[in-house]
Amino acid sequence: MCSHFFGQKRAFSKFLQISPLVKEALANGEGVVALESTVITHGLPYPHNLSTARSLEQKVRSAGSHPATIALFDGKIHVGLNEEQLEQLASSEKAVKVSTRDIAKTLIRKEVGGTTVASTMKIANACGIHVFATGGIGGVHRGADQTFDISADLQELSKTPVCVVCSGVKSILDIPKTVEYLETHSVNCVVYGNENVFPSFFTRKSGSRAQFSTENLNEVVDLLKTSRILGLPYGTILACPIPEKYAGDGDVIQNAIDQAVREAQERNIASQSVTPFILARVNELTKGASMATNIALLENNASIAGRLAAKMHEKRTITSVSKNHTSSSSSPRKPKVVSVGAAIVDFEAITSEYVKDDGGSYNGQVVQRMGGVARNHAEALGRLSCHSVFISAIGDDQNGKFFRQHSDQFVESNEDVLECADFILLDANLPVPVMMKTLEIAKKHNKRVWFEPTDLDKVKKVFDTGLVGAVTAASPNGNEFLKWAKLCNVRLDPFVIDTADNVLELIEREKTKLLLNTSVFVVTLAHKGSAVVYRNDLGQLEFQSLPPPLQMDKIVSVSGAGDSFNSGVIAGLVHNKSVVESLQIGQECARLTLQTSLAVSEGISSHLLA
Image (cartoon, rainbow, N blue to C red):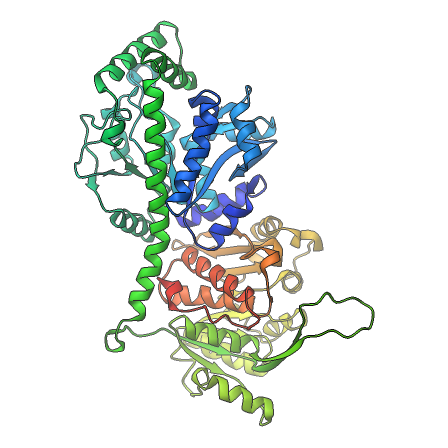
């Protein structure tokens, strides 16, 4: 399910243009709400469409989340529009309606495109956006037994894990058949209210029922979270009846709908043209009343979606606080992770002045801090509710004393420590004989081993042990990956590390040689993101590209960021999180460390596992 998100992100990455605000919100784990754009291009006339688009975004912001209106321009998929783009979209007379099947065509023709429910879900999921607000979803058309006219929205809901906040099914459709279709295809269907009566878009009630009803958005958050934990690939509908004060005269609007449907049939209007025609005709027949109601329900849905997305972030924080106050006597056993490798003391000269190559002196300070790849992992893992054990050699000098004073809690030494480990982190700074002994024990006891190469010239060490097959996870950077490939007898163009997609394509082509026995393989490419390959529960390979954890202009220091990322992934795995959830934890750990001069951010803690 979530692996599908990363697979889609990789496929969409060449075309995605995510706005800086949306990208930052996603990186920070904040609430984001996707908004479709056919309501702008085809649903409402200008300038009502523009004012409504602005209003919907504001409703999302007021509810505590970030809006991400999605549309296609100039051969790119834009997620999050600026004011100029909204104006261009709203005023375009040549905009096309873009369902899922139309995405590729619209891109290659570089048309202006408004996304439907189906395509917006697909794109939102590819970006990691889990909540989407719209007016009403498409469904089974009246007379579908003769025309086979069923909206692509329903197909997308059956395979894309996004929550669609809407006012139910457009009342111009066959609501009972649509609800039956959703049930057949395992789509969660929830009414947001005190009565389990599925809404009828313009009016509050239809003759159909949903899966259940609730007035508690926290229950919806739990439903979405549990569905993801279970790996269920289906979407969720949160059907929101229009508030009483906005509900129009149902009979008047329904009579207008019936008349518009008859006219559409008489004029042989079919397929994607049906809905825009009927909505426009109903607006004429009701003298604008239906449009006012339409805008009201759109705004209501955007507000609810904003609250839902915000609560998804809020609930994670509340849960983590609660866990932090759990008594130690009732705490479950902490998974043990052993980090074997280097411990060093770093000295870093820092200045806020602009340094020129002129031989001059600059004001600044020298910061002393603990470092070392394995030590960094040990600290981060200890902060992430792991029983973190660190094995290293420490000198008997001033630096050694400094290290001991600050890290006793992370340093332990036992003969059987590796045998009892749930995971082993192996630092390439180790001598080959020590590395070989560690891998022998790991192989004997079937332990998972994460190998961190640390340096271009040290990649070879693990191959020299003759036990590289005992490594189950590895995290080389771009240049280390080039050396890894050479040691695996894979010829490649050095420019392959220019993009994560190029790396993934190479690994997919040479997977037998490159992956060896690893089940998780991460190639970090600094500001270009990361390429990730892992095996799912069925043993099948999944290929994913991750964005950079943080924008370049907000980075304080890159030292320790990779170690923090690895530690977050390992901590997630040993706490029984999915690989996708573990990668998200790793991204957050890296983001926090990038914003501090410390090798491991003090903001890394067990709350990230909630």
